[in-house]
Length: 336
Image 1 (tube, rainbow, N blue to C red):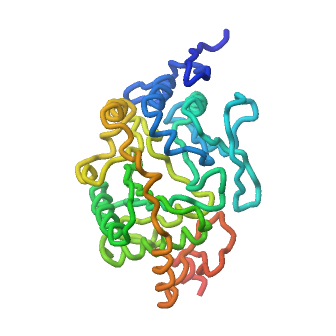
Image 2: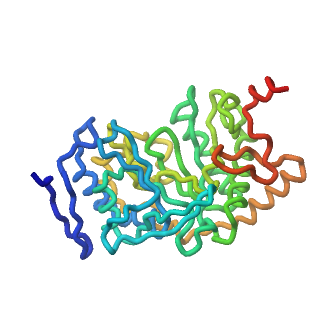
Image 3: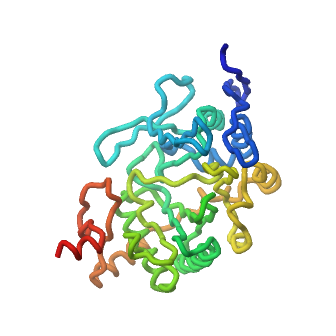
């Protein structure tokens, strides 16, 4: 017997949703069709977040309690209107990743049980030069989402001092993401180094709660600002992306005024459509608020002059110029 399906007409495209009643989110029973319809309900927001960005797909064919498939390459068998962007990984290998320009492409990916969309911070026209600085506020074990919100408030304060506009969103899990648009004239190494300098400034102001320590054994019960999310080929869930949790949370853009009072669980496949219908995309102005990265470059120069240099890269990267020894401190002590 052929599998059941429904066909949706989306912006002049026909998108087939196979096994539409398959439950992907067991807590409330949302199905694959519910996931597709969620993305259609936030169409302007998800397309703005993904627009012309190479995007990795996090697929859950057996639902969120099953094994995840991280898919960087789009399937060879796909509609002719599915667009791609070619990216190169630290290994030197390349891949054609999904490149969204319209919501039908999002719906097509959701039919593949893509729950999370993970875009690059750069666009197809210039993949090697990010146009987004990402500040990832990541509460560690022993800390709470409330701690993350306290740190995010300090991030906002520091951004204001720089004259930067930051756009916060819940991660949809434990943390908070803040994005700043920048001119795409800096490479990944420069943007990441600026993110590190920014994170260290936040850490200096609130050292009892904030850490930039790459090694988990050094973080303690503090909130980690993950500067390495700005390294090349590292991605985070986009604004309006669903998250692979049984309760169907989504990564929700919020205003700075709202942030102190929100919780991750406030924003789900079930609740976000009504919010979006009422407010629209609260980050609709993000592309018009471009920040001058040169100001953070001056902070980098200040650090270098003071002898405060690089920090470790993720383990899949080759040894990078100026990077300290890439070995966790407890192991380094044993070796000496």
